[in-house]
Length: 273
Image (cartoon, rainbow, N blue to C red; front, side):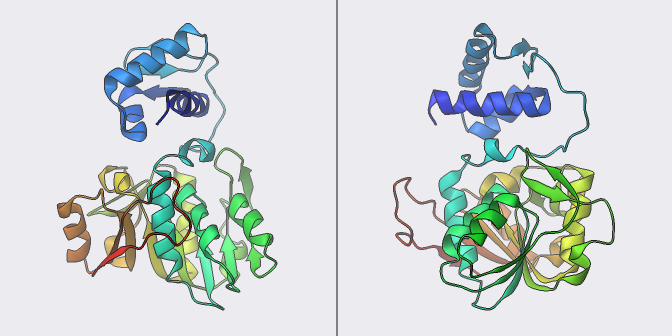
């Protein structure tokens, strides 16, 4: 990743979270600790952020309540090739005429490119997904009511009675913060609540998670492994991580990340039962 792109992501994260650690940045940007520290020093020298012990802090830290979830613009280019390959494999599971639920996120957003000429009935809480799908005029798009969170580009409702109560989908496609033996995890209580409501209106759960997510942990479980039908991840997943999923009876699809310049349809994927 180019230095300019790293600096943009670091700036967005600091503005969103107020404080971000070197450890988080190393994992997110897949860069060395020395590189991240040099980035922070350079940005601090330019007056873009403040150096603090173990990380970086915004010059004007936020104090208002906000979601403890990643900034959409920050996450969108991270592991882009892996996310695109994951989305291609997940889209192959959708049939013409399907009723599906697509949870907001940067990995699920990549699904849009591969829906082609399908005609679908879709419930999504993602403004970017809804906006892109509307361009084809082929789909019926439903958005739940609630509060808009512009940095995550989603709408969430704390109330039990909303549009999700009246929608049925054959499959829910979602990303996640983390995935391990306890199940699918998120970091924000409102996100957890919203995703649990989406689970209630879908028969089958497909998790689209790049291999980083198999090594991330949180204290908030959205769904146990028993609720998950399929996981689509990339070839960066460790053998023991994949075996954990298979042992739980989860269909596992492992994809190979495409080259940055690859054309749609240029690469296949490896299916592991």
